[in-house]
Image (tube, rainbow, N blue to C red; front, side, top):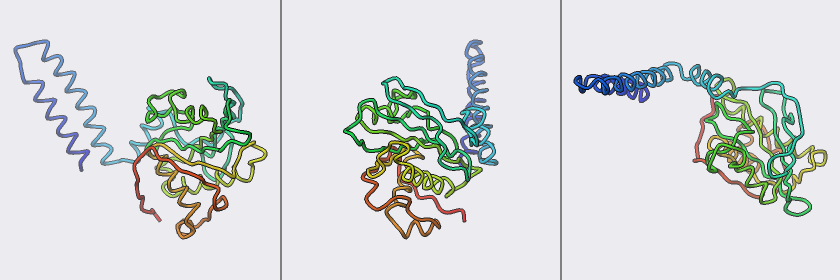
Length: 252
């Protein structure tokens, strides 16, 4: 309802602007352009009210160019600060987007640095592990939380997760829990310290990070989701959230 009301208001504002001053040709042309923009935004807002899942998916796939990925090839490279990057390591094949990027700091904090796991934002419907973090001041990797963690000597794991609306709650958190288990079981192979872990995220990823930590520390909550903790008690040493707290009701 709020989106529809906003859309109608924008259309009315556009019409009023168009006829505000008929004497000035330049103003009329500007008003027509502004009114057209208002109309497009109004249609989009109204459409999201009527068909939110479809419009959100269209925006994600056609404007954000980030969707659910079922296939990717692992590769190795070096990022700007000299840190080593292992891209698209598959941690899950039960649902799409089960891939992670692993960054090994060029200046590690000791011989066995803490592993920081970071989850991207995107309103649960878009976003990607390789994106920069606007909450950290920009949209490039150099501006990202990952780059800051690497500079402080952490090894960093950035995980993708299955996106809504195709995969509603709690699919993403169950997948991420499997990802945490994968990391723990393959710690030696991946050269990661999984006895000391920090988990965080931005926006939607911040909420997922909080839920993932809760799942590791609260057996009753894990049981409600029909699963169990993936790492032993004491593995998760800290958590941080770049986003507000949110309680999501189960769809089941």
